[in-house]
Each structure stands twice: as structure tokens, then as C-alpha cells.
Amino acid sequence: METTAFVLILVALILLLVIVGLLAVLIYRLTKQNLHQLPTDSKASDASQAAYHPDILQRFKEAEKLKAKNRAELFCPNHPEEPGEVTCAICDHLFCRHCIKPFKSLHFCKEHLPLLMNKEWVEVITVKTSTHDPEEGVRLYDVKKTLFQEDNLPAYIETHYKINVDQDFIETYLVMFVINENAAIIKSKLSSFTL
Image (tube, rainbow, N blue to C red):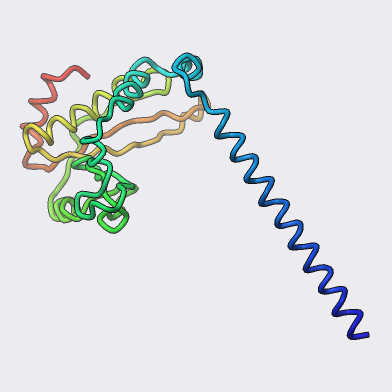
């Protein structure tokens, strides 16, 4: 009786190993097939990207122009051997998972998290965006980046959602927050940008 049970368990284990092996081969082939189906020429790529907004297409073109020297920006500044995984909501630099901390559904580097915690932040502008016309939202992020890089004025942007029950859709708003003592300066600078 014990021998029969042992043989049955052994046969079941062998069948299980065969099934797992076949699944692994199937997954490998599907992955390999999907990699070969990716568009490699620009005509196929352009056709697949026809549904994107022109500003987003422009960003794709800019990303393709990355030179080797710019690739260093894709790695953590504190750990050059680690690829950057998340950007800081204030400085927009990529950091590895050890150098970035989540807070309020955003991520902040170790340098800017204390700034966020120790200062009073106020809302300076709210922009309503949509997937059909993301241009204003893209410009707001560009303005935030310019304010930080050129004027050393930190800011971060939160995405807020509002459910419109009457018309059955979700509205998206981008809200820029700045340090309270810089609010007047930034509001005057925002008037010079076209949003």
C-alpha cells in the first residue's frame, strides 16, 4: 500500500514538473514573439502613435534624441550604479528607491523632504486638464521646472480628481503648491508664463 502511494506521488510530481516546464516554454515563446512584433521602423511607429496629442509626440521625439552623456541623468545622483526609478516632485531628478521617500502620494528626495515638512506650503494655481487637451498641464510642469532651475524656487504639483456625478465623468485638476514666503514672487512670475 505504501509503495503504491509512493509511486502515485512520484508520478504526480513528475507530471507537475512537465506541466510547469511546458508553461515556462510557452511563456518564453510568447514573450519572444511579442518582442519581435514591436515596431522598429519609424513608419510603423508613427502609425501606432497617431492617436497621441502633438505635444506628447514632440516629447517622444525629444526622448529619442538622448545622447550618451544624458543617459547619466537616468541614474541616481547619489548611487551612480543604481538606475533612477522615481523623480522627486520638487527637483525632478531621478533617484533610486533608497534615496526617495513617498509623501502625500508623491515622492521626494532626501534633500527636499525636510523642506516639504518644515515649511508652510500654499496653493498658487489650479489648472483643469483633460486627456484630449493636455497642453496646459504640460506647460504647468514646464513652468514648475523652470522656476526651480532658473530661480531656485521650489514647487510641487498634485493631481486632484473630482467626480462629476451629473455628467458621469471624472475631472482632473493640477494644483501647484509653493512655500508660503515665495507665493507672491511666484504668482507674479506665473503671470508672465502662458498657461
